[in-house]
Image 1 (spheres, rainbow, N blue to C red):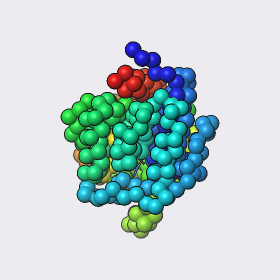
Image 2: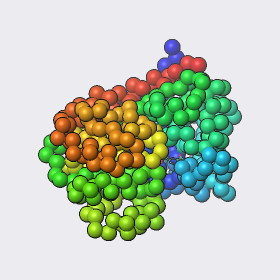
Image 3: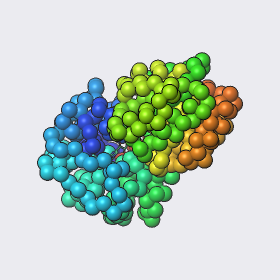
Image 4: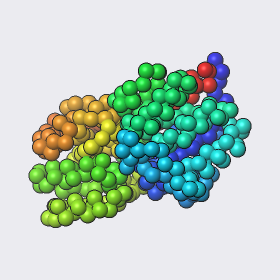
Length: 357
Ligand code: HBI
């Protein structure tokens, strides 16, 4: 059994610099895996777009034009690469330095890194961070899964199932440093919604449900789609919505922990749901649409409720049952399933398996 020697190259998402929130859950995933693999004695180098900051880790910043977010594409969209593409520039740099590393981990949900896999001399592990979105991505993921078995990693079975792969793949779930998250047992009369403010996240349903229950709603996250945000404000002018901004984890967990529940209203197959784990870590129950990765996270009636997708009334009914949930059970679930150590075991197993092919 070849031991994974210790030099890993992590290549980030091209949709935004680390620290801006544009990379969504991938920013937190990349940070947590870097933190845990470093703790385990691996040397991790990170390549990311210019302007990236990921304290305390060093980042090799690469200039170039950001990539179009995959979720704005249609199923039949062709692959587009802008001139001076930061994605292409990051992978050109990786090509030049690859001899210094044992393995690359790709965090981008993009065609190019997958296509380039056979052109590299060292193995590339691909962490696929969203469900199936386009035919071109499905196709190239299938190609890599066939030629390089075991190199494709997902977060959840539900997410993986959207690709319908015949070959083996790995489900990593996710994990985070739970010591950052304080358990709160005395919530105030507030609901929470956390995420990139964009149509696929279904924020309007959370606002509608909060309005019906008369409980104020706190919204955390970066405004990716300003017009979508404005539409919600216009549609619910008298709703007590408090926009909290895109907060660093320490502040986010302080505010989130005080909430009665986290409303998770994805319109699409959410690959995982980092924010759901952050909520559980603070003792905050989950009220989520029964779709995507959340169906593997919520312990029905124990740590939250899964409701009929896109049903505002379902959200309202679940909010009425929150007193059935023991908030400490939420914290316990995070500790047993989503700690950094648990995630590190899954990631290390995955990477060792690739090197032993
Ligand atoms: N789109 N093209 C592209 N590449 C990414 O890496 C990417 C994306 N959209 C969203 C995204 N990554 C992340 O916010 C989610 O995977 C969490």
